[in-house]
Image (cartoon, rainbow, N blue to C red; front, top):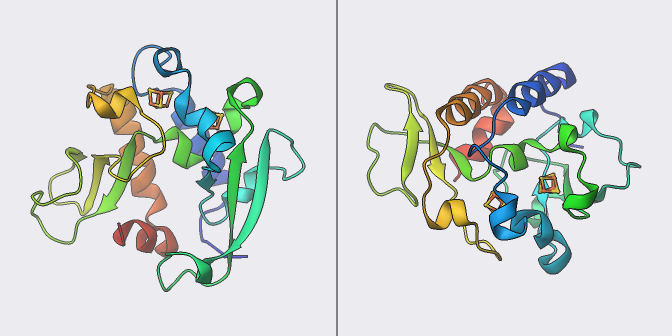
Length: 185
Ligand code: SF4
Ligand code: SF4
């Protein structure tokens, strides 16, 4: 299994911080039928857990289905040598909200490392970047098999959600594996 430097206690603290915020001040699942939660059934879409994030979870817990994948078979950075966990949700009615993985909690933003000071030529609009930092948050730019109204309308996201998400990724990129992952955007 891929060995990251992020500890279980750090993942737990991150989950607690992100429990307190949400992208918009209402349940956005109501406007789209929770499209991003349903897609697992239709398209085999799921989420990769970050290195070590599996320590927060119990693979026998039935709300997620688990698949172990070799990084060599997928488009991961060269430093990612080993296996990673890909999980599928069994639908919003089964969701254990307190255990939502980080990649779910920070959607519809995507964290990226920008290696220069330019914000131009990005794959998607920049949402937030601290001055002088390489870390930036964009609206999620990659193709999705469903329509997310927040992305489609590039809705104004709540400032506390953006701030918490940025803080979380600032911590996470202290782990070189995670830094490499989002450097490759
Ligand atoms: S698809 Fe977008 S609007 Fe719908 S629940 Fe997911 S994040 Fe919210
Ligand atoms: S963890 Fe919960 S909220 Fe996130 S995609 Fe899965 S079912 Fe939806």
